[in-house]
Length: 219
Image (cartoon, rainbow, N blue to C red; front, side):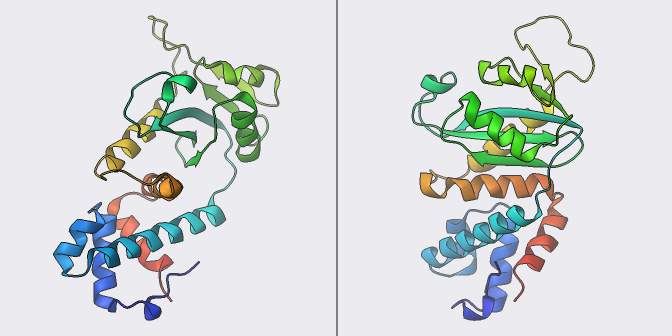
């Protein structure tokens, strides 16, 4: 999906400026003030950029292999809580990260075993090492086509080297830090925002993000 700049009501210099602000993490409302355009025009342009990113990631994201960390997290909402019932009002997201490589994140309807394992089987190559925490939904991986390594965060001793899910937890921290700047995200559009976070992680640093997005939005 291309962002057809020639069909936009915004001039090309304005579009280029908005792309720079988007990459820099400047919210659309602030970018509108800085460029002197209507707020809704900037919001719509940002939305189209996220659609381009989501479509392109769907084309490019390869299967993950080797050592893969998986974890689920919860975004938004007003109440802190545990998984499942404790996450009322929050958006559940599942993430998979190849160590030293790419991350893949997707909204999920729930954190049941059937949901999570289906995504793992779709995105992870057989015989890969899958690192998880002790959440019960991952138990089925013990008798699967993967080598399952479970991390018990409640253990006080130092786990063997490599037995961790620090990579995917780092992604969650980065994503939540980025999304915190927005004053609420409509649930129907949240999948685009989490894909933006995936893109920012996989295509960093910022200089590469800018070149990447400029290329993806060319007519």
